Image (cartoon, rainbow, N blue to C red; front, side):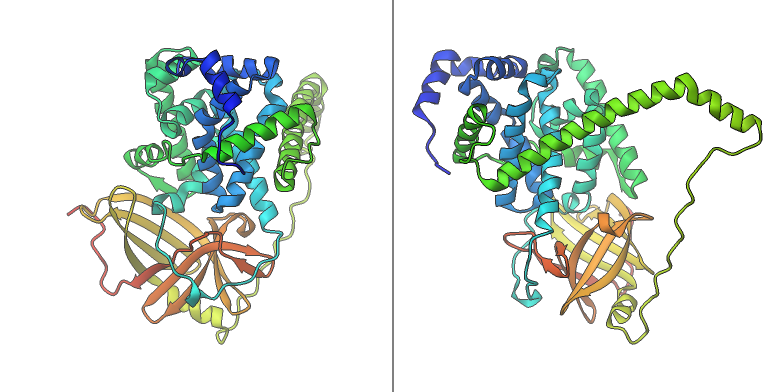
Length: 438
């Protein structure tokens, strides 16, 4: 990708929109210029305006710089394909967030199918390069944000992820600043309730701080903006443009296919609902009046997993894990103390402010241990959930020391997803620390 910006586009930016006026041009105006007039300057402004948010969500989910840039480009190329059909252009930030989230998940699914070598634990070095709270809850929080209704999701994106004031967000969405504040309050309540249902207890203050830390967290390289704009122009001329990288093209096709399926699903739901209202309710009432239960499929038979024997290394590891472990580390704005308590196959993780000992967050997961060659893997997932939908990390236990490295299992191999992997060092708690305010 080139690092120089096109002189033609810079000239257009100066001629069409003066720099001091750019902030006053709405997303809806820019999108109309791009969709109707193929105005490259309008598209580039959208790239600079929403690019940091899009790149940040891609990086959070993929944890791989190159894959995140592919997902970034696929997101904005999807915008190029769908620009004329976006009905609520004022809510473009929320639309881009959902597309970026889905494209990043698609890219992550593709990554798990690629062959990888299992790295040796001892050869990996590095220090934590992200807020540990985001490491714990970021994936779940992104999922809950994507589920929010548009009226609540868009203010969260604009104010927390793009750093806009309530007045600026209100101007963009054509509503008073007080309405934005009210919607943000409702959005935080919904997010907090969603996290609680998933076993993550986060105080309102901690949730607000966590969201605020993401404002402009990622800077978009100028070369990435330039190449994305160039690919978008090529796509307008030829939908199968060979100049677009293959990885980006695959993600673009997958994103468009996914959006088409979601639209068809929504239409199908409406049609089924209408049919049920027309005739299905009468049939159900007849069955119930005759004393017959509604038809239902048989639940699948439960399959009980056989636990490993006592002489199995994983069983020994499970016994060692029981109890409390502690780690003190630097967060984005403060030093944190993390305490994980393991009982059976359940882990409860609590984060405290190390200075005040005030509880910041609490979450519970279930886990299972497995091995991939010589590598031991700890897979965690929501309580009562599906292990296939969880996360994993490589671990090593050495006496009263426990080390973990976040990553992904790919088939029977383990792949660390960080370009500069991190090792987290936990120490056994022999005397329980005080878990309340001093």
